[in-house]
Amino acid sequence: MRLTKLIILCFGMFVSAAHAQQTISAKLIDATNQAPIPYATISIDDYTGVISNDKGEFNITYNKKITSQDSLFISCLGYEQKHIAVQNFTDSIITLNAKSIDLSEVFITNKNYTIDEIMDKVKAGLENNYDFGLTKRKLFYRESYYTTMLKTDIDIKKSTIPEFNQAFIDSVLSAVPKNTDSHTEVLAELYGKIENGQPQKMDILKASRLYDKKNEVTFENYEDRFNQIVRKHVKRDSYFKIKSGWFGTKEEIDSTFFEDKQVDEETAEFIEQKKEQEEKRKANFLNWRKNTIHNFENNGFLAEDTDLNFIEKSRKYEFELLDFAYLNNAFVYTISFKPKRGADFEGTMYVNTDDFAIVRVDYKNVKPLRTFGLLGISLNEFLKEGTIIYQKNTNEKYTLKYADASFGQRVGIKRPIKIIEKNKNVKGRRKQNEVAGDIHFIVKNIDKRELIVFESNPITDADFDSFKEIADVTPTYLPQYDPEFWKGYNIIEPNQAIKDFKIIETED
Image (cartoon, helix red, strand yellow):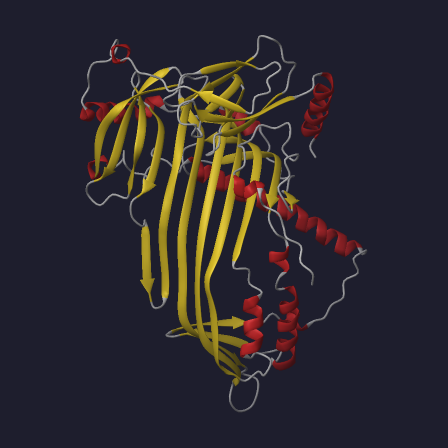
C-alpha cells in the first residue's frame, strides 16, 4: 500500500474516533401518491452528496461533527427542494411535495421559444456548456451482470474416444448454472479528459466483487477428467483440426500439457510466480475498470458516433415541448423525443431555460439496436435504456453527476462441429481420433451499470502528469451482500437483487 493511502487511512481512523460518523438512511416518496422518487440529489454540503436509487432509497455518511446548523438538502426534478436538520435525524421515510410551476416566473428572462429555436440553442451551447477539459473525478461505479442460459444442447453424433460419449457431455452440461449474476463495485479517483479516447489514470480506493465462487470451479473436476482422457488417447505430437461446416482452424497442442509437474508451494519459484500473478491481477483489474468506466462516461449524447444520437442526428427525431419543471433551483424545459426516420430511441430530456444545457435525459430503445444472423450464429442487442444527469462544477461547466444504463443481448449458435486429431509423424492415415456432433446454445445477458461522481474538479496538465498510477488493489470477494463493507463511504444504495444475493450452500 502506498504511503499516501496509509496516511489517509490513519487520518480517517483518527477523525472517526474524534467525531463519530453519522449515517443517514431513508427512502424518498411522493407526498401525494406515495410512489418512490428515484434519482434525487441528497447532499449535506458542496462535497458530500449522493443520488437515490431506482426505489428512492439512499444512504449518506457525514464525516465531521454534526451541528444544529447542518441540514440535509434534497432536490429532485419536479419537486420542491427540502431542507431537514441533520442533528438527531431518525426518519426512515421522507416525503417530497410536487413543485407547482408559475409560468410567469419562467418567462421573466426567457422569451416564448419554439421547439426548433430551443433545439438550435441546445446544439449551439454544447461546446461551451459542458466541461471537456482535464478533471479529477471522485466516483463510485457498480456493474451487475446477469446471465441466463436459455438453451445448452450438444448432440454427439460420432466419437472414436469411448469416454467422450453423450452421457459424459450431458453430465458436463448439467453442471452449467442456468442463471448467474455478479456485482462489482469500485470507489476510485479518475484523472483525465472525459472525451472518448483520451488517456486516463485511476486510483482505486476500494473495490468489491459479489458472486458465487462455486460457479467458477464447477468444471474443475470435469477439467481433470477431460485432461486424463486426452492424455490417454491423444499423441504428444498431434494437433487438432476443428471444423464447423465450411469453417475450420488448426490448433497445436502445448507439449507441457502432457507433463505432470508437481510444484512445491514453499519454493522460492512458486512464491515468485504467485507474486507475479497477483501483480498482474491488480494491473488487469485497474486497466479493465478504468477503461470500462471511461467508456461508460461517454455513453451519452455528447460523444461522436454515439448510439444515443438524438442531438447529433436530430433530423431523425421528432421533438415536442411538453411542460416546464423545476430542478436544482432552476427551471427546465421538458422535451420528449421519438424516432421519425429510422432512429432507435425515445425519451425525455430536460433543458435549463437559462443556458439551454441538457441537464438530464431518460431514454429507452424502441427497437433492437443490432441484429445478426448467419450460418447458425445470431445476435440480438435488444435493450439499452437509462438515465443521465449533469451538474455544474467549480468552473460553472456541466459535468456528469450520475448515469445508469441497462444493456441486453441474446446470443445464439446452432451449428455442427468436428474435432479431429491429426498426426503427421505416424504411418498411414494422419487422422487419429474424431468427435463430431451438433451444438445449440442460446444465452441472454443483461449488463446494468451505475455511476455517481461525487466531485469533479478541474486539474492542470502538470497535475495529470505528476500523478503516478499504481495498481495495488484487487476487489474483495463477498459471498453475500454485506452492508458493513461500504459503511462510512458514500455510494449508490444497492437494489434489492444485490441485497438479496446470498450463496446457497449445498451438500456435495
